[in-house]
Image (tube, rainbow, N blue to C red; front, side, top):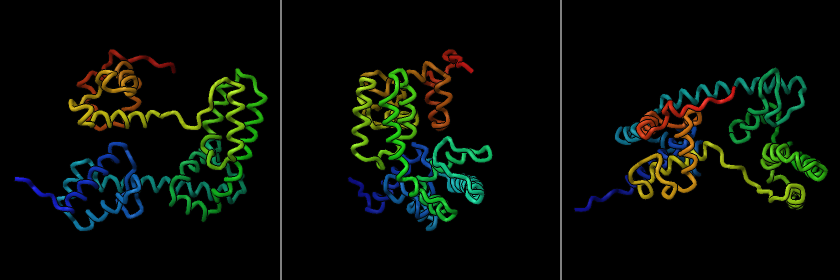
Length: 285
């Protein structure tokens, strides 16, 4: 006898699966109509479930590890921090400080520039910052000027300076690619090839958080990994093997990544030999 699943249950399961993915990726989730994840209104789903007091659905949401009170408390703390930064920004603007939207910019010993860089991805913060008197659109023309200076420096530099130019490229040129002229990009590519002998790739190297997400996806992939293991053969894991193996043989690296895993996942990792103190490699201070 086949059990038929209603359309509503199917949709609920799709939302629950999306929520589980967001939780696995440590996404900052907000149960409101403004929050989206993977272009889906996940926040609206969570808000409606609580508003309607759908106890069955709320139990499923809670079983995935989503705690409404905890999330709202975290968001409240985050909003308080944002307000502190906004007050500092308002003070800096009122004093006539020349604003810089980069990680190097400090004001009164605070990394105000880092806050502004991150704020550009938050539409709510962008609106608040604009009301204070800083319009991010004012910075659209400046990346082109920096890219032209970067190109000139690149053409005139010594090849031994490559590490310095790699750093400048990733920090100041690549993040603004969308604001650069196509001919400038082409000229940088040619100059890079002539100076260093290799091709200039216009994408960021994969960061550790992204590699952890891929590692987790492998762990929970029932087709590729029916055993539910964190470390299998290189043939089974592909490019993820080296990343996973290094963290098993270096407790220092694993402890740095510990915050990205749940208690249950940490216990699983320990059962497979991770966090073993015999692999604790002393790092230089």
